View 1 (cartoon, chains in turn green, purple):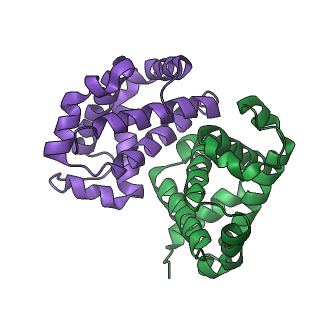
View 2: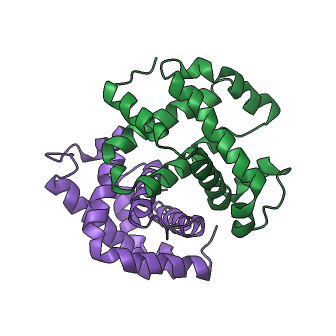
Amino acid sequence: MVEWTDSERAIITSIFSNLDYEEIGRKSLCRCLIVYPWTQRYFGGFGNLYNAETILCNPLIAAHGTKILHGLDRALKNMDGIKNTYAELSLLHSDKLHVDPDNFRLLADCLTVVIAAKMGPAFTVDTQVAWQKFLSVVVSALGRQYH
Amino acid sequence: MSLTPKDKATVKLFWGRMSGKAELIGADALSRMLAVYPQTKTYFSHWKSLSPGSPDVKKHGKTIMMGIGDAVTKMDDLERGLLTLSELHAFKLRVDPTNFKLLSLNILVVMAIMFPDDFTPMAHLAVDKFLCALALALSEKYR
């Protein structure tokens, strides 16, 4: 089981309590689709992804980014049981969505860059350590049920 | 995934804005990498201290950024331009090439903090491509 210090819990809680889900969700997913274009393979039904500009203006992508970020709420509320919390979602991504789990890491990296830009110098080394630890646990849980 | 003329121009533009603070940026990126990915500390067991402000971290951060700055001037032929550095990493340092990605991510994080508005997704793409190409050139001589 993952051990969290009080400091790590406080950092993660603080980040989420100040989070604009729509802004950060949209920016992170768009960044992922632009920086790692092969991830677009999972978004065939999401309308125009022709170039960076259209991706950034795409309302379906924006909505999905928000959805993904709210999905992280589950991990926030169950930090001591993230693996079980995401068991069903993991199966969904494996069996229905057929997403290569390496893509979770790519999205996590984009989310980290977007949060860093938003928080600026407040995104200290300690904050980044806690944040990336949280994301790596989420990423691991999402890939756990693949078979 | 080769660099387009636009990618190269973007990288040069950012490098121009970063080169004056190379030491600070390098130290920051290196500190973050060592903290977030503790396995990277294994390459620096000979240092007195691995904490963010330590002289060893600062000095090495500068060394790394000087190397990257050199690579920026040799973007048209990274493989040839980084030959000596590749041999160093292959035969002497023997850094597992996976780690280049880890440092790259932290360089990107530092850039996002420094240029929150200008480090757009397209800029991120260009710099990530450059750092990937750099890593590839550095691992050229490994085997």
